Image (cartoon, rainbow, N blue to C red):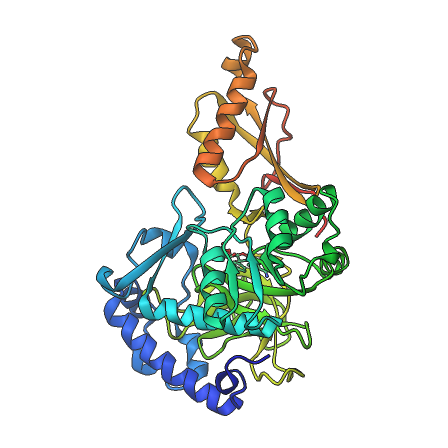
Length: 433
Ligand code: DLL
């Protein structure tokens, strides 16, 4: 179903006219309100009134996660704090998270776009939505929550964890829509089976899955195991949260990007040059309507492709292909974004381990596992192998405290991790995606 007939089916010409007007307004605003942008524009020799056509967007500077980190926590905000009603955060590349803020109108736009998203996936008034995305600093839980309410369906704000209880609730409440990460959906199916419940006999009709990479094969597996229609949703905190793009239930082929609010581009991740429709590269977004933290040409590091062929659902919006990977080394472990550098900084803060480590990522029983192999330092090693287990538990706790992700730490003998002759290979990802 199309939630906003007018804006989701705008003729391209009208859509592009709207985008240009919003883009011009945006560049004028960030130039005077965000010192970072004034400097970045000046360095590139571009002034707000140089933006005469949509193509001129290529003249504008990029924004990166590092820029957000350098302006931590509120330096990128384009509005006084008194207008900010919500703050979320996601993983940064080091110890500090990436912070985003929302004005009342931003929250309203987000709810509206999430309502569009849920409708596109096949959700409607009368549905009971079991929302197992995490509530908290992560944008997943609350993003869906507001969208379901805006649509007029019922939301069950169950959040993540306590899987057995979740299975009981979804059965007893007769939930019809499941929202969570695709790997957690499979885990729910498995726990249901252990509890003697066949998921396919529950009332679920639709699942809206995202926040981590998945594949067509995984979609098939989920649809068969859970007996529902599995739809892909994409988003990222910096740009808004979930609801930047969604597959439509009609075609389930590519994710429609809400272009009246975001201008997408695909660039070559090495050179930064814009690439034409149909060519794979890194996704870049400019936010057209965000008030609190508008972003110009934000480099997502997600690899995808854009295509403009019309869709049978009737939406005129551009589609992006499934995310096929990242142009950096960010991992997503049970929905939590993790950069190897974050783990490194936890390890380096300790005196008892060496700088040699390796991360082994795997998927067991549909759950991601993370093992951190780290060499203990020579001194500790020769000091008799006392208390190694204690040390392992300690490091596990440090990582959990800093990153919010559980892992297993294995201390290994000095010089047992293979030394590299070039770039260190820190991550072994055995998940078959
Ligand atoms: O994951 C927002 C979200 C919540 C999206 C719920 C969908 C559902 P972050 O924590 O900032 O925000 O992580 C954003 O997750 O840059 C991608 O690398 C990855 N990601 C999100 N959706 C998908 C997807 C949320 N459908 C990062 N497929 C992004 C593949 C995805 N990767």
